[in-house]
Image (spheres, rainbow, N blue to C red):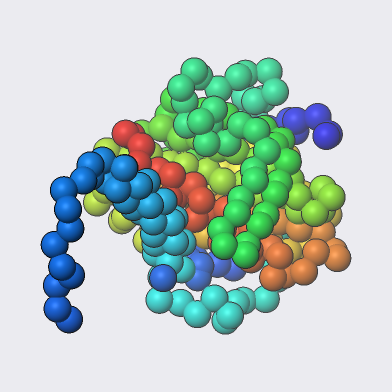
Length: 243
């Protein structure tokens, strides 16, 4: 695995995604112990609930757009500035970065199976180092980000979480966020990228912004899959967290 990148903040990059875009009653039975049945039903119900929640999170992320209608690829560029280096500043204990981003990303849902290698993660006590003043004015309180690589290093996935005081603020921010509201860390974009896409989605009191860049030879559908499922995975997890 290559060393963690030098993560200084970068200026926003050109977006080409704004959203991304399952008769008669039976005869009486003799008395019996009901607990094995109750326990079994509870276990089955638990599995079904988890499956429904994950599927619902991904369906919600898709919204009303047709995912087969996708804009063409764009070239993404960025201008480095200065920001803490996650390789030397470990995320705060119990922070979002440690809980949601540290370690390799291994995702499976039905027939979909995706994997990405951990590169870096960082918690931010406020949004300033990774967002513009405009996003802070919309109510952003703190943030976290994680970077993963895939396709033999030819694809890089960055996911940023911006936390707000209320769900209403997060929803409003997700609907109005622009590329200039985001300061990307240096190293979050793959070198010599030819495809770059981003998406913003509100989840509970947070906005999840996903970025995926890839080099020549990586199919655009692969970029779309990492963007879609990678962002949905984090958005679904945030629903159950106390932010």
